[in-house]
Image 1 (cartoon, rainbow, N blue to C red):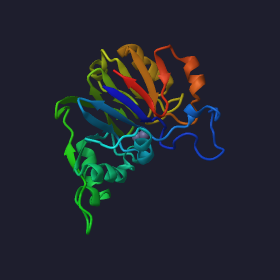
Image 2: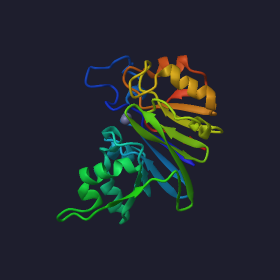
Image 3: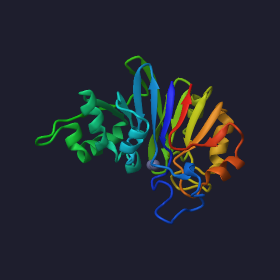
Image 4: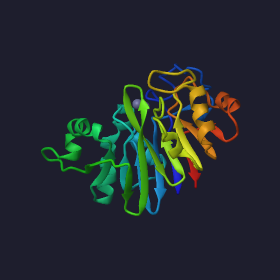
Length: 250
Ligand SMILES: [Zn+2]
Ligand SMILES: [Zn+2]
């Protein structure tokens, strides 16, 4: 399994805007973060989690020309708004691409992106919505998912083998952290150091890590308040901030 962290920024990306650097050292390229998404290559399948607003450039940088399936974590636009960029993936491979999403997302996605899922005027649909099940088998690959709390809504954690992805986490529901035992790699969202109403802070995320003990933990979904080097200095060796284009072979 090959994992590419396509983007690891929060909803604003990092830096926030020209000359608005927060705490980051702008001489360190790894502090330049596009909005969060991840590509998983396994069993000859390309699985994309979330369609970041930066998706076109992310797929280009990863030299990716095919996506077999999209999995959504939640409806927020920093995780969905790049969906129109999937049109190129459909065109190149002459196929309709399935998108799995929790049932609470379906109506809004169908309405917002009607031309993509239903077609409109001269435009044929190029993706299809499928309802997410907790244990999904896509072709020859098992994908597990469960909801975690993200403030006033839920988002999905995904687990494929010994890899799991949990972004936009405030807390986990009872017993669910046990589903993240025996991981080789956990990519988890860390928005900023202090807690946010919809995101756990650094101390809380550290508690999750010490409970599940993944072999390696990578932070994603970081704002410009988190500098890569400063964060590395505060973490144990097997816990590190991600950067755009970071690759893992599991
Ligand atoms: Zn987000
Ligand atoms: Zn969110």
